Image 1: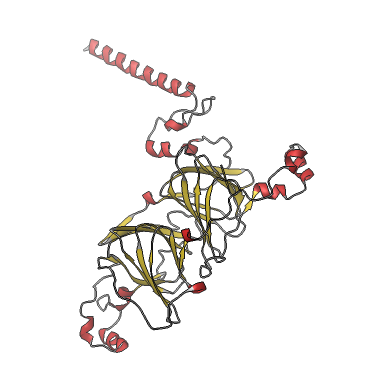
Image 2 (image 1 turned 180 degrees about the vertical axis):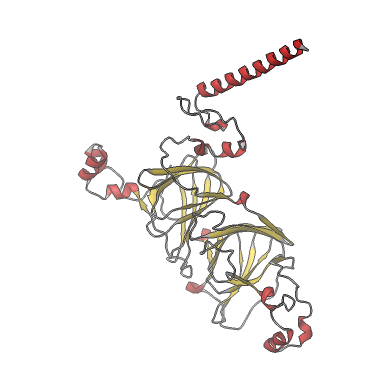
Length: 415
């Protein structure tokens, strides 16, 4: 018995010694952020020995202290759709990001929605504006405004719709699998009284509207409404629409159109040669008066130049690739966040920031959203270049020739 205890003690001592060596190795082996450990390789930090989610640590090295310039207290500005509750429905699914998920997003709520072929998002309207971006498959949208003008259009990859508040609409999937991003100009989108679904209103069993009122309203026999769905279906299976719409106030076209086809238009000028930058706001999509957007494709190792937005918070959806951004919120407060596909973020209005593609091989693709009628930004370099060079040189303690050589044109995306 005594020998057994001595052997156990020896084994325990070996294990503890091995763990101690492991800790020392991790401290001495250079930065360990890529391995999910808060160790900078220069004497700061130590391995995590308690409970942790290793996959999250590996995906967020900057949360572990990798960016040594981070300072102060900056609230969390990031939320992943993977952390959202997914609502499963017959014909598809939906998952949201609202203010209770990301409290720092004061202006915008969003959702990913999936429809199979023929599936219909129930007829409805909102107290807020809805903006949609198709990123897989194709959909049929239909909507009617207060003047009886209508739109029925097929949208594919990169196409956008904007429905002003109160406009009645629906969406149907056309391909086998269809998916799109939805954006709303109210962060508390789940609040009661924000969305009005047709079955919620008409179904007598809820109870809401007596059938005799429905019959009188439509000029039909009461029996027509015997098979109304008993509850709000939200999304339901159907067959692809084949009927045309005519009459009323005519089609919504020109400046009144609810549809913008992003890739049918030229991208913005990008002097920095770092990728593609599409702007979609009221200057080229007149009906979109409360949501302005950009679609951005940044080349590997590219940089969205340091800048800020003077007119609105910036809400972001990352669709492809890997990147990071440092957000400066004033005084000496700054924090760096790592992003990958499916992540969303909200940067405070007027906060300085950049976005960097951290991949050597893959483009970083994202969408920027602003609760505004236009996209506006002020780049750091252009500001300094268009200020007296001697003042800039004295302020930053750089040679006057360097200050005089700063680029006066927005670079936007830098390669």
